[in-house]
Length: 93
Image 1 (cartoon, rainbow, N blue to C red):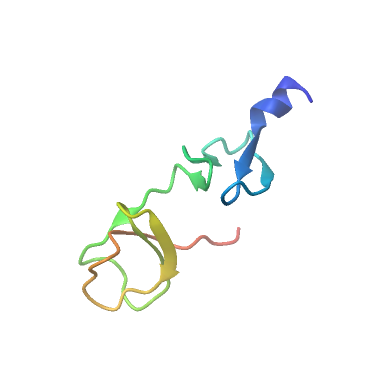
Image 2 (spheres, rainbow, N blue to C red):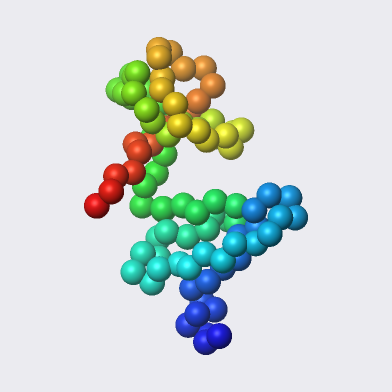
């Protein structure tokens, strides 16, 4: 394996003591990389947005509770008590 390959390949541990999956980080998109825990791949150019009065309701969103670290797909129906931030879903190019 070359130094170039070592630089762009990282092992992500999946689950407790589970098998590692090799994931290639694209040199063309260095902002897409594992997070600090190594358990998620993130795009650092797309931040979570705080839930406020302008957050879309009754449609599918990515939702997260920042302090609990819990993220899921779902829809906000009205005032939100658990989720703190949201993000739009990705699209195909």
